[in-house]
Image (cartoon, rainbow, N blue to C red):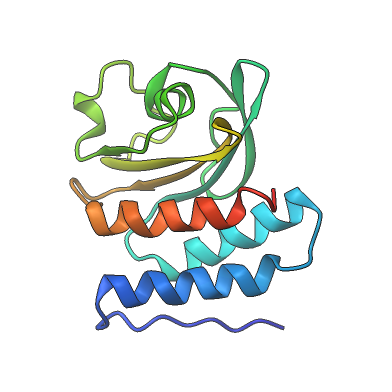
Length: 160
C-alpha cells in the first residue's frame, strides 16, 4: 500500500520534487501504461490542491482519447489543435491558461473549470499523451506548476 502525503507549507519546488519521487516509485518497473496513468492521475488528484480534474488524454492517430483520470466525466475525443488539450498535443508545448473562457476554442467539459494546465508527454518529439489539470480557481497554475508537471511528463514518457 502506498501512502503519499504533501506538506502544503513547503515551497512548490520541493512539493514537485516529492511528487516526482512518488510517481517514480509508483511506475518504476511497471510496463502497463494504463496502470501507470491511473496511479499517477490518482496521485496528482490526491496531492495537488485546488483541482477539479486531473488525468490523461492519449494520442491515437490525430486525436486525443480520454485516459485514466479523477474528476467528473469528461470529453472522450479531442482533435489535435482543438481546445487546450488539442493545442498542447499539436504544438508539443505546455499550455498554461489562467482563464479558460478566454482561450479560443476552449472545450468546456466541466463548466466549473476556470483555469487549466496541459503538458504534452513527448516521445521522439511527438505527443503520445497529455497530462491535463483543471481548477475551479482562475489563474490557479503558474510557471512552477508547469515546470513540475513537465518533469512528471518527462518521467512518464517511457512508462506510458
